[in-house]
Length: 317
Image (cartoon, rainbow, N blue to C red; front, top):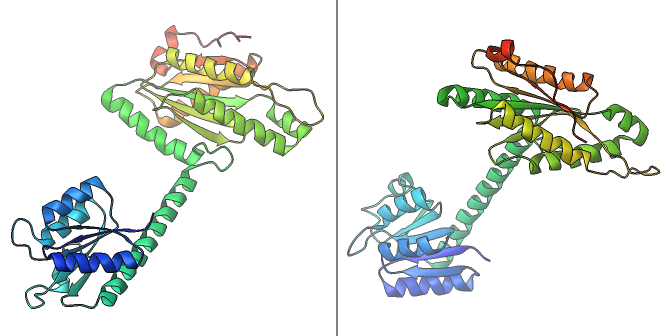
């Protein structure tokens, strides 16, 4: 679909002439006889450019429309006026207009201004897309498309602050793919990458909307579970573990292979730093490694350490 233009002018001959010329130039065009009618059309459809007169006999004027359009609709505005001594380019631009044209004008002049505004709009849109892409790349792991470790640490700080402010529980999983180096050495890094990509997909499929998963480094992953206690986090971890265990990989020149993971689970204790929180999750994960791998181990927060067991949960097969 081409660029959409809305013409707002109380004079029928102006609307019809501008509309006909813009259609001939290849634009999709609508017109309105009042600001109120123009706003109604903008609520019903999206426009790239609004071309509006300044003075209307009743109701709102073109400058008021300009402010509303820029605030609520994000379209560019070209202001037309036959009263060049009463209104200035600077005034229109200060209220949000992208250009200003004095009547009477040649249709070709208006078309040039429309095309200039559209070029600037396209450049802005492209710049915004690039910024969004760069921002995404800055927090995303290129292989797995999970968030990266840099984003993990900043997000964990936010979640800890939120947990303290609203007194919500917060849990953390630290996950390591078992014997991953041996898999890489035997089948090559390409096959190893396939395991990591598939596991990241499994990981996301096992989480809720407000949970978040991260590639922590190499074959290690973390999951932040807001508003989640240790027991519920353990269930999430077991779901992730059993789902991967059921997955079958097919490296070339080999029989089908299954992969397993070791998971450490812990709940945040309000007296500790985020560094200690992550360290305890890491300790829980190593308990799983020491217990034979392919299992989930839970370490309680500091306040509960005296009365809770640190023994890893048994493996489910």
